[in-house]
Image 1 (cartoon, rainbow, N blue to C red):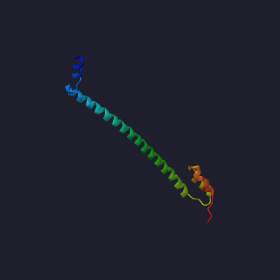
Image 2 (tube, rainbow, N blue to C red):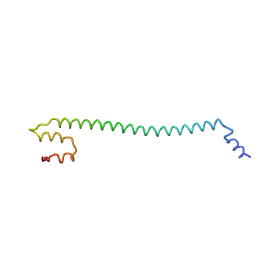
Image 3 (cartoon, one colour):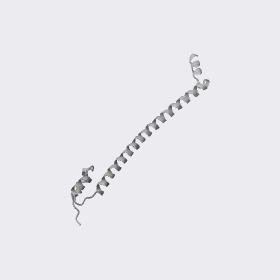
Image 4 (cartoon, rainbow, N blue to C red):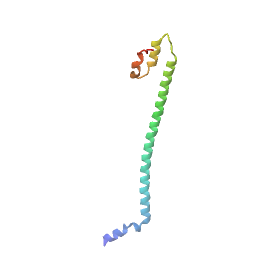
Length: 103
């Protein structure tokens, strides 16, 4: 007898407003979780975009310095000109630069 009264009291049809509020709360929690995941991914994309912009700026600076060094060619002082070109480059890229071309 007491068990049937409890079951009748807990019947969702008896409390439709409470059931509606529970459904809305669950939907809000799911939406919040989805938004948190979306914003977390976006912040990672933003950070990688910023890093890419910094890398591009650094590469442009190095390329500009190399181009200026290459443009200031002095025929009477080739070793100094070669040293300026090698400055700031990777060791692998300077390895073969001391070879002379045969025509």
